[in-house]
Image (tube, rainbow over all chains, first blue to last red; front, side, top):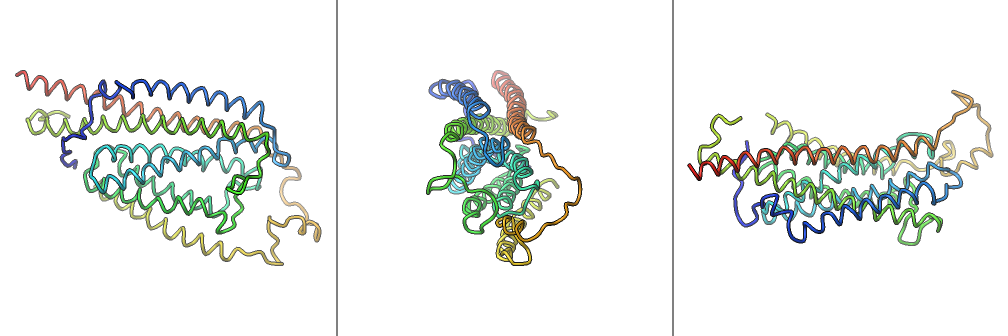
Length: 253
Length: 110
């Protein structure tokens, strides 16, 4: 099932080596920044930001729905770009980044698709509408569900890897469609934040930007963590191939 | 078996994407307001021209606070599930790595 993993310069290093140096210092720093930003944004959202005049308190879902959508974009774009580079170079490091980006992006896509309906129930009176942005977001999620299904077991061969990478690259145009779907197709999804200046009250911006910063740190942290684990998994596969070559794997299951 | 199943699933997902985008475009093109069917974009004129009897319960109370807390809980539930998954894969990989390195080291010595 699993084809040989070439052991070369890009082969993953042992965990101890991967945690040393700059990465070893950045890791706890990023953790600290994420927790701090999450705490401050939580306070801003629930205790400082005012309730919206028509929707009331439920509008505050916006403060983590939109940053989650942004985190979804970060994850999916990371997966798409890394997959493109993997297809061009066949470098396992990019494959690990693609897997990490897709999994993390998919988690945030699920968050977007579950928090949105909770807001819609109050604002629109329905849990779901086949609005262009909602529909295209669901479709993008389905593409990356396929990617994660192909790659989730960790035993993917070269064919599955290339096929999944192709799917991730294919998903990139859908992200552009999601972004412009509201303007192009005039759906009912709100467009509060635009390049022309938004319809957000000035007192709402601190909570929004703090939450955006917190989710940026969180998505970076999660992609980094998942990439490290995927690199270790690649090392395991490489060692399994080595052990098989030396007949160490007989009867080992 | 698993490989062909996942490839079929992936193909179906791709096909769904293209048909879905096309369907979205068609639905959006047909979804133009008409005089007979007032839309949510113009609720004032609808209310100004007709009074309609409510069907279902007389009052509806959608608790915004509960929806907000539910949404926030869902965010952290999914983030937690992702972290647990990363932890689970990491633990499994760590065990495999240690076993393989030990086997290879024993082989080198032996």
